[in-house]
Image 1 (cartoon, one colour):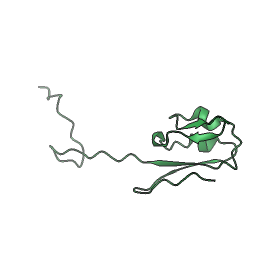
Image 2 (spheres, rainbow, N blue to C red):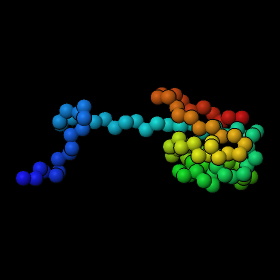
Image 3 (cartoon, rainbow, N blue to C red):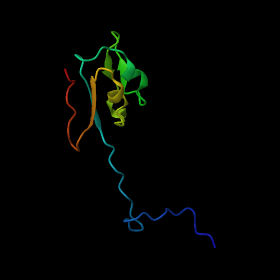
Image 4 (tube, one colour):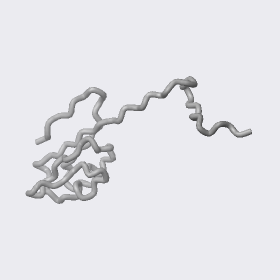
Length: 99
């Protein structure tokens, strides 16, 4: 009749009884070039993950870099080309803020 629905579906390349390792989550680095930025706030207002915010002077700051998914919305919509988002290689350390 019907198969047991509690069993996990077989995954290609994984032997029955083995668990497939979870893929590592890529990390991204967000660089803000403060000399180019006019502090319009577009990046902070529309970041879908809330990675960026504005300081008391209205300048963008990287608040939660670990939440970045690399969508590059901030980079693509910055009118001053003052933001760069790049994927970090495995084991690569994040650099300090860009000047």
